[in-house]
Image 1: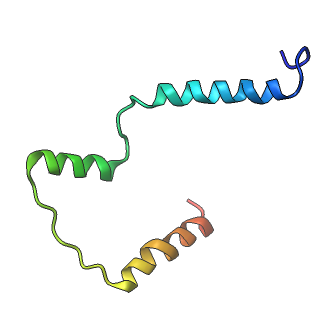
Image 2 (image 1 turned 135 degrees about the horizontal axis):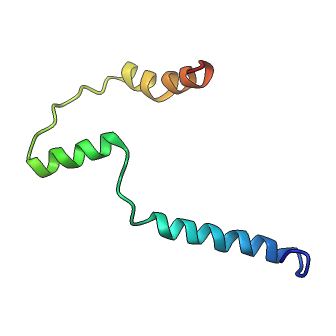
Amino acid sequence: MAQYKTWPWTQWSILFLAVAVYATSIPMDETYKPIILKRRMKENGVQKKQENGDIKSEIVLRFIRPLHMLSTEV
């Protein structure tokens, strides 16, 4: 197809393919475990325990853990 059309059509065809893949992925069920557990707790009426949000744990959670994961091999 690309050899018979101008170069923008190659970009459009990639966009159409991406939209089709995205459209088929919208109705999929959630697979992220923390979200699934939160939904189950909400459906069953279970209250989540309150976590203290001190600044040190937030810094570790948001910055240091991702850097550690990037720098170490699994």
